[in-house]
Image 1 (cartoon, rainbow, N blue to C red):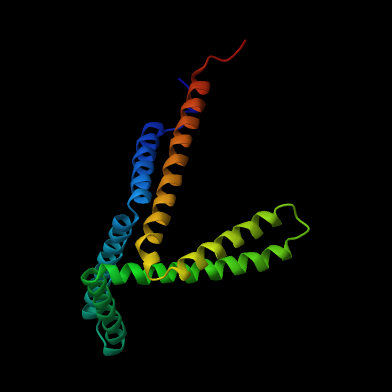
Image 2 (cartoon, helix red, strand yellow; image 1 turned 90 degrees about the vertical axis):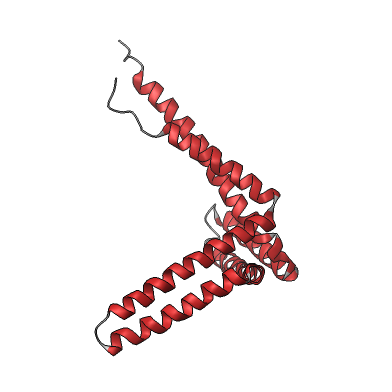
Length: 185
């Protein structure tokens, strides 16, 4: 057996399948998936806010205590509000995605022209145009786009990540088979 084996093919395959199935389900039921994302974000905000408050209370001086305490309370309130009203959180997240895609799309389009002599400039231009179109689609359908956009985008990311891990596991298996093969000669 060779020392050149790459580990983790089975883990990558299993993780890839789970992520791909989860991504497919997210795309099939985007409102449910988007709501789950909002709950995760709300929970993370609560955790972050609690940690900031604890950190502030453990600080010694007022100067070191006041800003983290205020930020912690604001973060706790934001997390609580998101969890109390996940649909509003979903609409707000969709709005943030629309703004992100529009700004990033415009930036990529403008930046692509600075790379124009290079062969890859069209890929950046296309990526920017797609981002801009997606951002405008979300924006024009807002707030209803919150019901589909977050879940679909998370689903696409999970599906593509899952498929890439499946392909990676197949590559690792292929490499490991080649490294186990006897040397010619």
